[in-house]
Image (cartoon, helix red, strand yellow):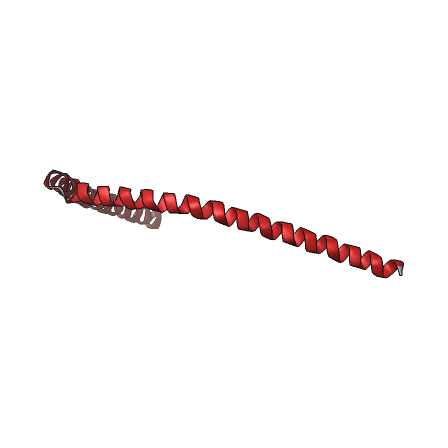
Length: 102
C-alpha cells in the first residue's frame, strides 16, 4: 500500500508542477501579446512616417547624393586595391628574380 500511495503522491506533485508551469506560460503569452500589439503599432507608425519622409524631394536628393558619393568612394577603393595588388606582385616578382640569381 505504501508504495502505491508514494507513486500517487509523486504523480500528483508532477501534475501540480505541470499545471503551474502551464499557467505561467499562459500569463507570459498574454503579457507578450499586449506588448507585441503596442510594439507593432509603433513600428507601423514609424514605418509610415519614414516612408513619407523618404518620399519627399529634399530627402530624395540627399539620399541620391549619399549613394552617388558611396559609389565614387567604392570605385576609388577598388582602384587603390588594384594598385596595391600590382605593387605586391612586382615585389614578389623582383624577390623571385633575386632568389633565382643567387
